[in-house]
Image 1: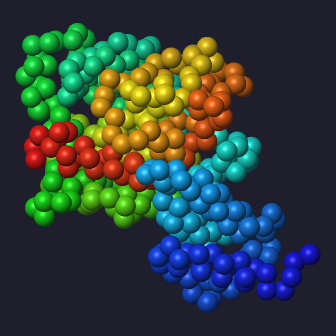
Image 2 (image 1 turned 60 degrees about the horizontal axis):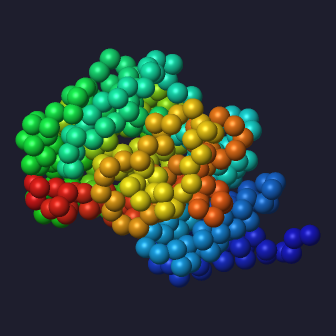
Image 3 (image 1 turned 180 degrees about the horizontal axis):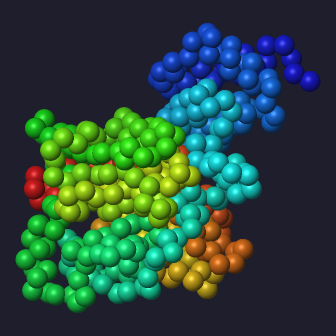
Length: 373
Ligand SMILES: [Zn+2]
């Protein structure tokens, strides 16, 4: 049985803790009253879930090193979601019967659980120019001149070569290829500018999630997203009927799409923007075998678990918004990837970690990664 005032106590509890984190939650007396009223009618107790979820992140983050999920932003996101949508505590829960959502399945991934495009071709071996020489890459053509890797990273045919051309790489590795994947620095010398447009045909819910995802990146990082005026290279958010996916970095093809199907959600939008800012998947780091065990006999998508020959930035981060969950591309009911101790990995599709932000910022602001500086 609930005690009188219990709900009010919980709300005050969250607000007091939030103030302790230096957060600024805007919530009027009317909203609190409405929240209290809504909460009383909901089963199960969603405010309880919200608090428990946030406390869980607090506990998980304790002593987790420098990659902590921004639990404060997570709380703020969940809280705002709670107020505006009246009871959905998972930002990623898609519409549907709820049989396989973040609420019923902690390993649900709005990105990996999207159906792959029917037009996806057979895996092909290509090469890509990189800071470290020609880099082999397995891709699948998804539409004429557009190639997909790991279900959600896109590459243009101009980025890919059929053979590793060493002579050409000597030319490109001097920095041209590197710089071409970076967004331009603003006159202030500190921030970087990312121009974007949003397809008018997207449903309002997706537009809202894009705005939230942009706000989340902008609040945490030095990237500044600007509505495109005359910029030649820009992101175009649309629904390309191909799930949730993005090009990696600024590709230099003019308009580069970020595709967001209706059930991709806020977390996938943050993840795909991460790709557009130059991030690859966390578990493809060169040091990943020290942190995860991969069972390729439990998936038919070996190339989706490729290890990249790249330079890792910062510590390995299980909670990176760019990390797969344990069942990504699983063909059995067994996990394809676990931590070294055998425990499972829940995909974080809720908030950026400090290391996500540091990674994207480093490849733009560190002269070792951006020779345009
Ligand atoms: Zn991805």
